[in-house]
Image (cartoon, rainbow, N blue to C red; front, side):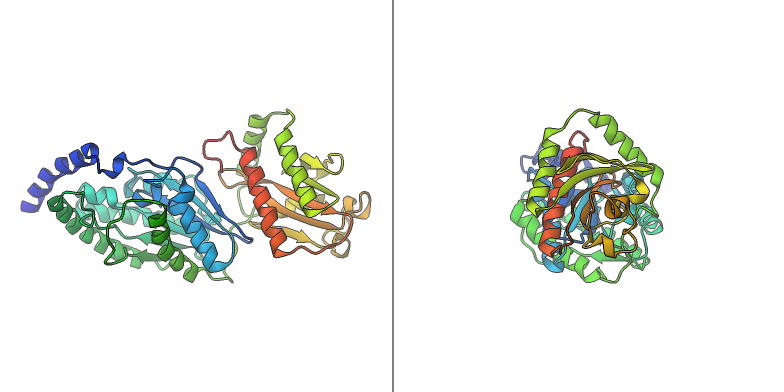
Length: 401
């Protein structure tokens, strides 16, 4: 009873400090740029970051300098592979709102999921039973929709007493409640075989949110993720298994936004790809229901091909690049009209282009009439160009990246 009264008296004091104090993190600048972060390389590992607090990029103006960007780069440094981090974050998000926040996201696209929840509940002095119910609902939803090979990492609720600007008596009260919430979190997470609880680092001193601080916070999270990434794990879901109707809806939305006008900037990017790799041609393709359209092409006239004879149709069924060093020697492609006839394509390299919702709608590809090799450095450069084209194509969508 005494605890309930204490909490009832403390809640308005906490809210007043959060809204009025010049030291409140709610007054800090928050990153509002693209929710899609990329670290360079090939064969990207895909991470979904969902939640409140440190995930939102408080104190920095771009997610590249916040936790998502540093997490992508830290993970790439550990694995040697590229990393893509998609984020669904809101400073006021609660765990109860979590299922709705990820309801439209295909969790099968991701190799790892990171959840950052509980700061808002700790500050509101939520009761343990309500927290347990809400957390269980979110984790059960995630577990039912994510592949068994995808590990979910649940971050512990941080301490508030380390912040010298937060009223000490309120901080101690909040931290006592946080400890109870973290105990519940450990138990609930332990009940799911594919989930890992990641506690806050012990003994850390207070530091205001900044790029170097986010880099330090990201490092242990990346280490947990890298330890859990099995190189032999099943690949993220491909387009064959995904909802083709959803993919076509994303393509249709792109077509409506772009119209039929010429796009000099896209053409420049396509030409840059051809020149960079020294190939006969380069193209940005869009894969429709039955056909492939070259939306931009350099080195030849645009060709319309049946989807059944499209290299890029194979590319969009993958999460990484596709390389065919000599199509004439590969029975899967040797009978394609562009291989057996004109222009006599031998070499192909392509990287999928994704809509903001993760649907792969087309590809950047380079092709040559001579067989050739394709190095890891080449694959890294192709991905970087594909991401630039992807950003350009979807620049008018609010969550493009």
